[in-house]
Image (cartoon, rainbow, N blue to C red; front, side):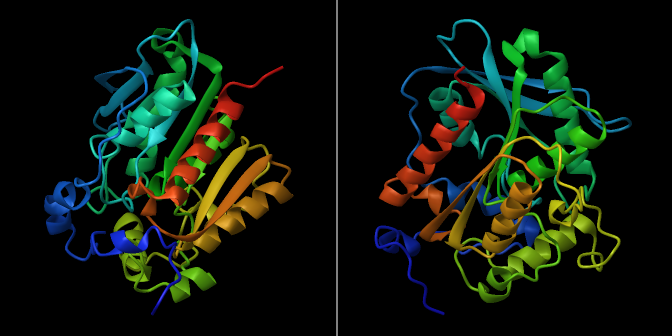
Length: 316
């Protein structure tokens, strides 16, 4: 069906990958080629990176991390545990290099990017427990990382946004590290797939209902999505109590099947008394931020940077 995309995005629509995760092994082989043609981000000031591995959940492998930090930092900085997108089945710290670098450089933060295990080989809760293990390790080693422990946040995009919401729930419920903020960009939150946007957007670029169905089937196991067996830590939209969570920043794109679950989660956070900022961007689609030359993308990225600066560098 036709969509009223932002005019600046229209020339790029044909270059956006026609992504299907039906053959997940083939899609992974093609992933770098599909998403590697966009302009590389050049930070305004140098950002240092280093790769480390940290202990994973009990009985599980170690978790690879990549740490990004402004090269000319003075004193401690806030920290953000960053969880990459990919529908629980794609993505990596390599594929999210630009985004993590941008946050470190422009928000003035130490970013810890997590190489969590992917479904279907590692279904829920494997990837989530990797992310939580990365958070607890980061909090325990905040001094070594140059992070102010009282200014530790979690954030990500798409599936990474959903995992970030789940990590925030786990940290609250397990008495884990206190979080000052959660960044939920176009988050994947609800396995029930019953919102108007999810029912309508079956042929949108990059993400659409057929991919959403496969994503949850890979993550939860076939036949589980939509049933009462689904944990709220898998699908945070199912969480009955959202009180006691950190302040949130949530974005939604107009022609994204995930739009309504993100907006609904934002509304529920507000009703639970959680300071929440929510932005809906007309004319955009899931993943349109790859088109960095578009004015709407520049605004989305600037809004995110400003929100992170306010949250991570609060003024008295």
